[in-house]
Image: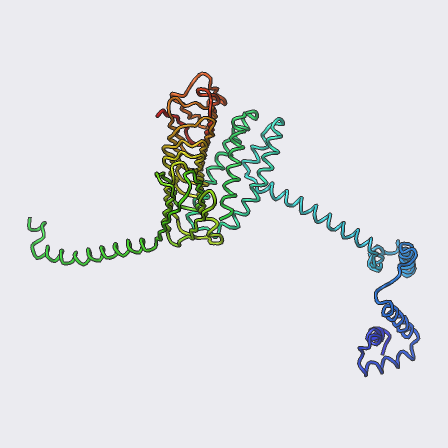
Length: 234
Length: 259
């Protein structure tokens, strides 16, 4: 038996799950190999300590300093074993892969928080882009043509458009269950409302301060929202 | 002549041939009529109520007709097309509620339900349907609300309620009645003509708007009314403005007529 095979079997030996044949072979190797015997002794002492403590461990006096020392030792060992940095372009990669990735709880928590933050940000950005992409091109072009003085209107409309997108998705989800007559009715009525919305946008793009068009636009958007809500519950 | 007109024998043959065909046609027609009648279900119930009862009806698809009568009783009749909807009216402390939407939750494909309601003249009626015509006649209660989410005409005849709301998307709205002092009246259509017929001495505060500019105030026009947006909107008082009237249509006309 070689050392590699032996060290694979040591954990089984310590656990007591090793077969009789393996145990005999392993024992004879451990009598001859001092290094493997030391590994066995270390593992036995660790397992023994864990069993006696039953998961209740006293924290080291300075946990952070301890982790720092361990990391320094590992890195010192790795840099001693590795060739000089200039000798090979893969040294950073080697260093990276050879590095121990045992992390403290605060490090793990910070990493988890960073991952959550990145995922949330990317989801929000993706949703925003997707929603703006789902808007009627005519709506967008008309919106762009509104003057700076109509920013409030644009913001309000943008908020309403988000609501409309939400209810539109709900309608699309349920639409397949409706009878064909109801689907036709809905589409026909939505077209009428969209026509009213587009007409109001056209008027507003020509005259951004036209209060009548603004009122009509608000009413039409409210109507659209109302229609979507009404049909979403079908 | 003999070449054109059939001989006696030919006529008899044609009659003999046609008789079974006619008989089959009648048979098929009768069968179809019977099956269509059998496919319908009818419901008729009566509820003793107060004279100022509130009736709420939420339909999905079908017509709603409401009439008044001189009884403290509501008579509800419904004709249900196949697949028939569940209709379970509930009588509450101050009224009657019929909610087809709630009674058929989870059922995606139900047939039209056509309602006819006879209610006391002083009732309040709150009517909704996703699709279908609403007709209300001779109601003098507190509220008349007729809301069609999509398409269907709304016809309100002989109404003198203090609050009237009529709204649809595709379809005409016709109101014939009187505005009460301090009352609120709103008429809104997406694509439809709105016609309001009221007594000549009606007094109200008006806001009427349509992008089509087709607003005809007829005898109710006065110099106090302001035209906004090149005639797309009219705002102002008629008489002493005792009630509030709001009329809007996106693609249609607004017409005021004198009774």
